[in-house]
Length: 469
Image (tube, rainbow, N blue to C red; front, side, top):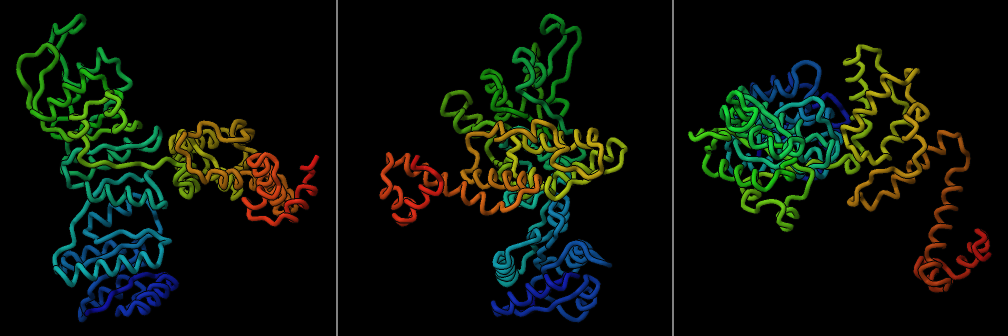
């Protein structure tokens, strides 16, 4: 078997991959630049390549393109520390086998290399060319967002109907734009309509247009969104709130591929890709009789779920820095920066408005903060004084107590408190014992057993914390 080529200007990354492949008995060769690897390609051919995307000289994408031209069947895994959709899109468009965001789990990387080796040895067929849309402000290092990036990459050449599920503010329309921009329909219109924002009396006309005289005030004929999007993509936002009668008409359009304007008698043929989005659980809406099951199955060809920000807290600092930079450019002012404490504090917040709420906060801070470095004290009053984060949804992770703990630590550090560990440990133990005693109606031995604590230790702690009073 030919070797796996490792291409990265970072010596530590090469070293980690070399050791891991050696332990797995996989032959390898390492290069510090894409140019070195291109030179070696004159006299040697690898079985699989794993390459960084940004390096001095030729980039990983340049190398990928040259590999595609010369050896289209060679699987190439692209690595990048720049965890945005642009990088994933570029990799998939270039025909990459897979996209690996740094920092990565070494076992995951080796498993991915093994999968690429299996394909290379089994089929010698071209890696599937993939493409997706690019949007610089769709960022994410969290595993959930990396899955979204991969899904977008694989969907880009498809005409399939897509449903995007996600809470308000998670970026559903950005993803819809991304799917359109790098699809075969990219040169045709992208038309968006929020079906929940238009009165149901007007929604039919908005979607399908109307003829002159179709109703009072219809002085001229009007093209609807379907006609405007002809050949392109129609994005139906908040489709879960679409009125029942419009659901019936939409189902007919999807089934027959034609429709009538309001007041019209001639069918109009349509060629439009539908991308729908909703913050609601459509499965539950169907069970409750609020959404047509047949329409749901027509739409539910491919489903993408966008995670709320509280499920990808590690992305909050990344997004906050990006939005702060973007707002400075929009407003033509000097860019501000966050202190480390402020970023840690923001990462503990639940952001019920998700990415949009974070973006709005960064806009406010760009305008209102007097200093160049933003501290916790510079945040709006409601962010500083809230003892608990409001707007938390019912499906918030059960790990939220950890984030609350992090928020308390951030406050204590900001105040300059001392002996934080000892103080919080005491509060933690006191809370555990208090709740255990409540649960057992004051039976100490039973409470100690439930907590895994010795009886004497329980007695001493009760006295220490004054709980016996």
